[in-house]
Image (cartoon, rainbow, N blue to C red; front, side, top):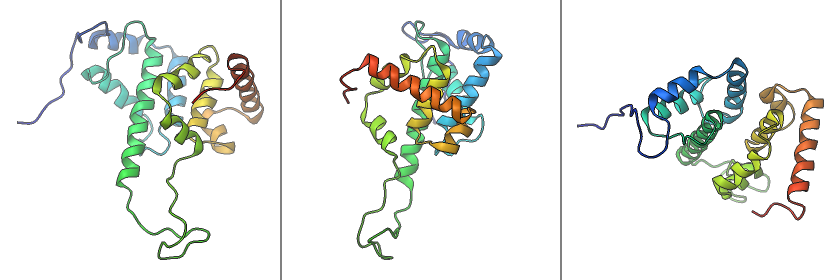
Length: 197
């Protein structure tokens, strides 16, 4: 007999129940929904999720009780973190299931001799995978009042640069540059001796 996912109305602990999650979804403003869509676009990069599917998955897991939203966490932040986590697991799963084939690289040969194949991780992804989720969230928390900076941070975390970052964030180059400047300035002020990883 297979295990079925059931909606739990009142999870154990101080978490939102299914009815409260439904109410929180209904209470999202049009701006919040646009932000979630932009964030989802960045997060689903390299996952295989289609448009709207990652957000739908996050909501379904919350309603089913597979992911619990603490009452003291803003619902938007909960959804963003849930999408980040689901996307990260999807990328890891895809990397594990990728076929092991010889990839010719500089200094290598067709039979795979020479340099080993690339792992597919950008430097930012490798750093974020090494970081504790709480540490990554701490960085994002410093930019709660700056949605453009949050979009840029998420794009960087997913290895997006240049045109891909402009498209994913829907920001022009001047806005991207200004957001990056704000990020660097705030991080230098908060961590004058550098962020310890």
